[in-house]
Image (cartoon, rainbow, N blue to C red; front, side, top):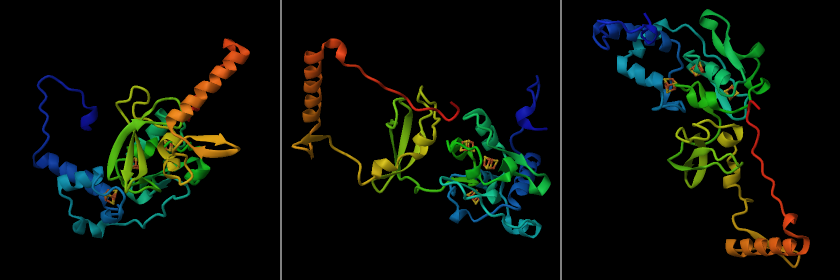
Length: 266
Ligand code: SF4
Ligand code: SF4
Ligand code: SF4
């Protein structure tokens, strides 16, 4: 009986431990890890992996399982510039499939094939890069194991809470920083604007932050050449120009335009 689907009934006794429960748990986890690529030290999910956590909890003896291992390693799908899908670490939980269906509403991936050959794939089993994936990365952040990992960006040493600056939506984000550089972006689940979700630009579009050509001070053109200026100087100049325009053409002469970006399912 799957515990997550069993309706509660009066007088029901739920046992969360004991030999019977632990043996059932151990068997289920053994079936998951028997053909699992198990080099945790080389895995980007090491120490942040649900399978590792549960295998430790139930006490899996990998040496004992070695003789049962039957599957050859499958090549990973590294076609996508931002995401690597490693089939050898996938536990077929289906979270990525539901995520793609329910959050960006793209349906780029689903279960395919049968039995040992079951895997998550795109339509016609094409590389992810050739599918209709919009690269939002929502599946990536929800995968409980190392089957979906970001291609670039080192593990951050710490995070800074801030607001996304590429567009005007005001998404709440956490910038992951290492050695003074932004290496990851995580959506802020407490933000009333995005509830932790991000589009491709929010999640992966951060290289401009560390780009050497990025403007870090305002520039004012003097004698045909741009010169660095303080924010006060720049804002004062803009205000003066606004006033000049208004005095010359009247109060209706100034207007403003703003826009937010499209979302993946727009
Ligand atoms: S997915 Fe988890 S259990 Fe598998 S190799 Fe990576 S860290 Fe280890
Ligand atoms: S990155 Fe987004 S669109 Fe692409 S497969 Fe994952 S959830 Fe679907
Ligand atoms: S979320 Fe990860 S482990 Fe689950 S099916 Fe997708 S790729 Fe496999």
